[in-house]
Image (cartoon, rainbow, N blue to C red):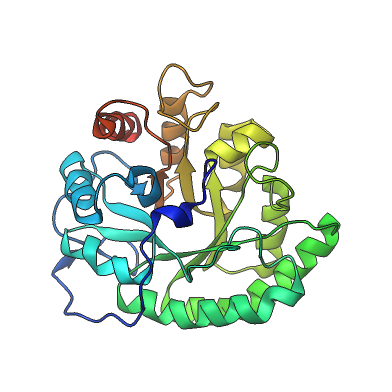
Length: 294
């Protein structure tokens, strides 16, 4: 996320939605995507809701589908069926709407009871509404060593993996930068996250690899993806510096990154999480889609 919390851009609502499922075509996982319009190329693409807050969710869903995207990221449960009814999927759901969501994570055992309760409530609901992924956080360091944070994260996430595996929903734990946007966040390097994933050892607990954040912290993006794709369940994009469009003003070769991801036979989503600066922000989204349509 960039400067402001994603939470500011999300509607608050109760869970417990129900509805008849629409005819769907499979994406090669337990969770098919509604409708018949699919992204060109080898990658399934999505957009993060909070970066297009000036559009209503139905407006964004309609535009995203028209561009060729397959999903919308970072939605609360009361929003999931809005995008499904538009022929898309919620590609990453929130388990709660909590102000300290980013800083309070699995690296502290004191948080486990609350975090597990949130996920235990949300994972079955996500399965019901065909939401393939639910987001989680490592949390702020608060003086903890990496070894302590890794051990606590493995312990907590191991407790939720049976439920995630039972329902076929992937818990994606996000890597964030602690240099620019999220001071003191502990899961700020790929190596930290990979050690946790190895310790948990589940196909339903993986990393959310945010390219923007990891470029800031460590760079070497393509090699890191190739070496660790087995532990990655989701990607976010965002230009460096500034978390803006994936254009010539950024320091990354996004087309090369897109090809590198696709070449690994990755089957999850790549969700665009940049803050558009163009007068017509949907032109930026279409351009990003075209870059990743490899």
